[in-house]
Length: 164
Ligand SMILES: *[C@@H]1O[C@H](CO)[C@@H](O)[C@H](O)[C@H]1NC(C)=O
Image (cartoon, rainbow, N blue to C red; front, side, top):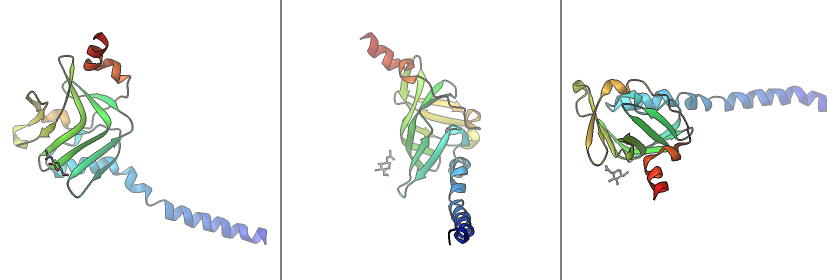
């Protein structure tokens, strides 16, 4: 009884494996498809770093991007990604952005929005609250390498807090 059940058991496991495998494929392809999604919305594919784990776009157009860990990358100056970055995705823009900050003169300023008004201009606008910063679209062609670090100590506001 036991011996004859072994082939069935392995057949069962094999079938189970076949059933389990397909759902893994979309996960593996998640990163390229986020970049395709950005491109389809007139945004450059390199806005989010290489270590994107998954993303979700709800019916309201709220995009939520999950990274392996918080990390630091560089466009023109350093940028810091939280482990979850979210924004309202519209054609040519990310609005109500949360989870991304950019270093400006030793200060870390939250990036509130990113807009590409006219791709032919070759420019992208970063809304950093106090100003709109124009950057070259060519900085965003490829997803940047993003390195996890002991970020908190390096962040400007933290240093200020420590001094106070
Ligand atoms: C972002 O989307 C939410 C709905 O998902 C909406 O309530 C909010 O007003 C939007 N914010 C901006 C700045 O577009």
